[in-house]
Length: 190
Image (cartoon, rainbow, N blue to C red; front, side):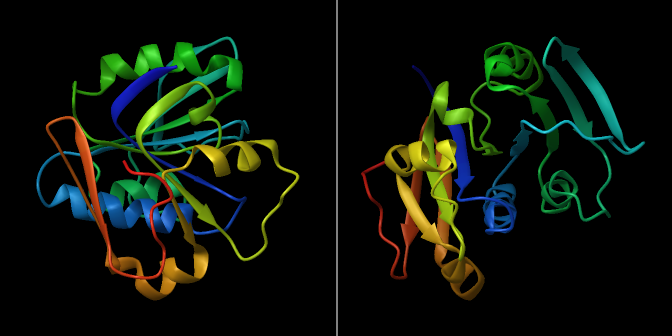
């Protein structure tokens, strides 16, 4: 499994568990010190708005660049939080390797990337993996069960909304560092 040090992956226990809220906080922090890119990867194919520009597509995937900062879409919220660029990706799990080949050409080497995806860790090892566990977890969801064992940090939805500012992240010299000043503790060293 290829290690991608510049990726901070955020996965979760399902919809509406706080993944994007957490991602936006990390993006805000990182953008204070330089450029940060963001990815939203979903296996669901939906109609997109006119402000999302398709930049690549192939069998089983589409990559859009988000240009809208005032909608409530996850990718728009990431852009509004300070990401230099945000790519919204619709792809099957099998399409992830081809998608990432395209993304490598669009993202500067060693630039920090905040990626929200449930399936990314099945193909790549991110530099840091955070799993957000919601109030109502779906223990039958295979990606959630697999990510429980892969995640470096597990945070709860209640702690995100109560103490989001207590999670401090930085990326430099190919390494993610973090400081957590509440009750959630790292499961593994990063």
